[in-house]
Image (cartoon, rainbow, N blue to C red; front, top):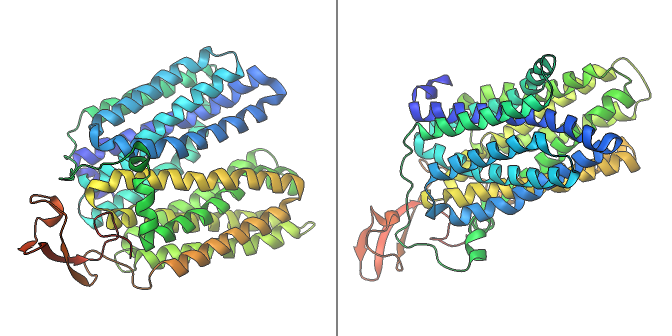
Length: 451
């Protein structure tokens, strides 16, 4: 898996991603302490609102970035996002009003909504070989999981030496280092459509979303995003309730529970590169969705039981299964988008995935919290498990039984009558009376229409 790090460009971009993630993790810890200083006992409400603002920024800003991505150099866009994030983090220690926290969080997360989809769209160009790209996706999944484990530990170690305001400065340093690493490499030139996208700003901003709804595999991915969001919400929102209230364990055990989730995800991320050489994305991702439903079914007895020493190890096992199942769905996502979107539409497609997936979390996170507080954890298990089951069934129905693979799918012979000479899509086409004729596996992008 680590062989892809021999590529200098990818190595620099991956390092930038890891450093930025660590900085963001430390900022999350510091933000909680800042909220407590400002709002006292209302700190939970402040952080909950900040989380909602984060999701709204992701859902709203990512499509807008996709609309202008073809007019802004990708390196400039990523560096600008990093510098914006560094500037916001630099201002956070000086705020003394709740509304200031909300404004700065929106700016910070808006910059992240610009950086992440652009970064994701660059990697397929840096690593064009499918095998290398799959390894890069697994490394990216590992980076996210390791960040969730190590950032709090690093923050705790630093807080034993300095005040929490210094954590924000560490975040600033992380984003500046990320920007420097992006500047240090030359990115491959993106494929530019011979015919620029036209239409209103709204049409450009929704181009990626329309591509999702036009492609069967990507429509299935939307449903899978919802299934993953249901499981992630259960773990993220209610872990503390299970550990502290249901099982009566100490605060330190919360880290063990979340670590079990991350550990399950990491194990799968390490195994997937070789597995995906023999098994299709469809098989892995749909079985991951099925495993999510199995985990919810197993969580039911853990939640309903009145007592018993078996509940704690059972919860850890269930959380590990949730993590493994989420990784089975999320890790191959980039392969699916890369296969379904032509190169010139990858940034809007990744932006749409970023926005739509966070839209699912924006729905399930409050639902998990509200159901757990009002109806009890069993109600949350039943409702979110039903969502995961329904979403998985929809994905199974939407995704064609034969997974499209660019290298092995049946070739479809067809003609293009509205593309000008020199368009990159018809580089291998033959001139005919009414246009251009060629063959390739069926695509459902804007050039080929909905299947």
